[in-house]
Amino acid sequence: MNRATLTFALLLLLALPLSLLAGRVWIDPASTPNAALILSELRLPRAVLALVVGGGLGAAGAAMQGYLRNPLADPGLFGIAPGAALGAVVALWFGYAASAWLLPLFALVGAGGAMALLAAIAGRTGGIALFTLAGLMVASLAGALTALAISMAPNAFAMSEIVLWLNGALTDRSWREVWLAAPLVALGVAMLWRTGRSLDALTLGEPVARSLGIDTSRLLWLLILGIGLTVGASVAVAGIIGFVGLIVPHLVRPLTDRRPSQLIVPSALAGALLVLVADSLVRVLPLVTELRLGIALSLLGAPFFLWLLIRMRSGLA
Amino acid sequence: MTLAAKNVSLGERLRDISCALRPGEITTICGPNGAGKSSLLQALASLLPLDGGEVTLDGEALAGHAQRAKRIGYLPQAPEIAWDVTVRSLVELGRIPHRDVARGPVEAAIAALDLTAFEQRRAQTLSGGEQARVLLARVLAGEPEWILADEPLAALDLSHQHALIGHLRASAGEGRGVLVVFHDLAMARNHADRVLVLNQGRLVADAVPSEALSVERIREVWGVETQWLGEEGKRALASV
Image (cartoon, rainbow over all chains, first blue to last red; front, side):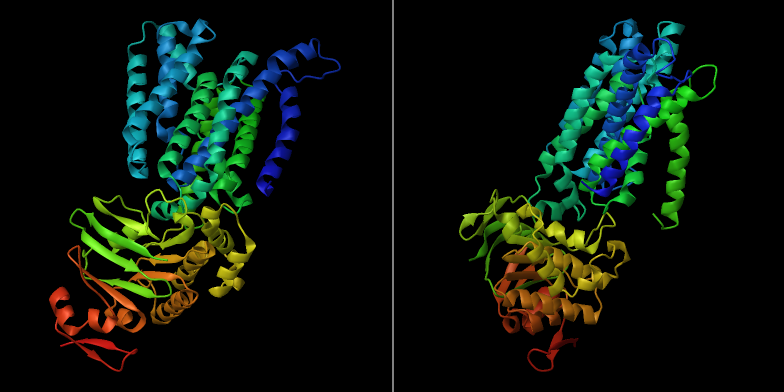
């Protein structure tokens, strides 16, 4: 266990109980009426879902940056998140929002479709450039279809549902979403963790990695499946939550020796922490309606990204 | 112990090439730009899919050879270090085929290239010459029987070139087979045991340096009139 894993695990242990108590109403377990019920049926599933979603996005970001050897890569680039979002939007378009299972199911089908398309285009050759381009193409196609669905929404209600949903949130989620997403994300993180050695070898470029015995097409499949499961499941239960996969590896990297394999587990922990803290903050903020988590993270993430670019430009990163 | 190419073909790049490397020797590949030097080296490292022929290690086909990564170390032409890892971590990457980070070979490689004082330095703070040493140490840490290096001298100044050749010679002295691509014909003439000359994808010479790089051959392959100066082992090439 490296220093980063330990640091973020400890921070999570501190943050979790605080986040359970925090909200529009602060809970005092001794005096708040129905405290046990609120905690077990509202706050705890929401917190666990934040951990699951954040963990998946953090690990996916670390693996993605390692694979593309680019600190500016984000799992959204692969087109899997936009694919999942398109699936969910289709469900909303047909008015399936009321059904608890159909929306996440459609989102998972969308993520699966994006994965299949990626694999069909880039899977056989295993080249990084082709893969990136294929990902961008899938992302823009899914984005265009989503925009089409919004512009042709059957009624104003469906349209506002779609737009609201696209700005991800963890509001009113229950254990049902946790049980849906947690196994998929866990399986995905395990797959990404298994890519560690190959990602380390890629530090020296693709030909050297192959000379070290790395099977680059197996690596690509593990990544597509790992990112598909983590990101697809996250989008299915929480909508689009951007920037976590981009920011988190940067927070973790200085605490490690910078080898990609050392980043995946601590990035999962740091992603969980970031989403948990951000979701607690949006609950506490004294606004008329709760700020959407996706918007809050983008408000945090975009300036961070700019700061990163400026730092890289001045050669300090 | 041999690493050999048998009738290897790859489009226009390699045409029906057969050659065998011997352990304990430095073999160099020379030829004009586009002659197929890097392609032959990568084919011997089993990094290129071939159109025809095969590469064998001790008589066994190399494609799908489980031991390949442990036995052949490859040093690419344009070095790439994507992340700012420490020198130690970088050298440890050489152990990936063995699935361990055995201290012995890693420390031996670091010591062999005089990198002990650098162990905790970050890769991006190294100069070109230091980087070249670290990347060779990465190859040595894998304890390969064969070292295949693609123009390892390209980015180095004269003193670092000589130092690196010294390290390659030491590796050959320990019984490894070393194959390097050299652009500098004088380097090849002075430091190689054997020279393979390629021209337009064909192997036109496979001999000791004085024979493979005769002025007649240089005229025929490179189209330049030259003359060798100096005594054997310290030759310089002058154009006439």
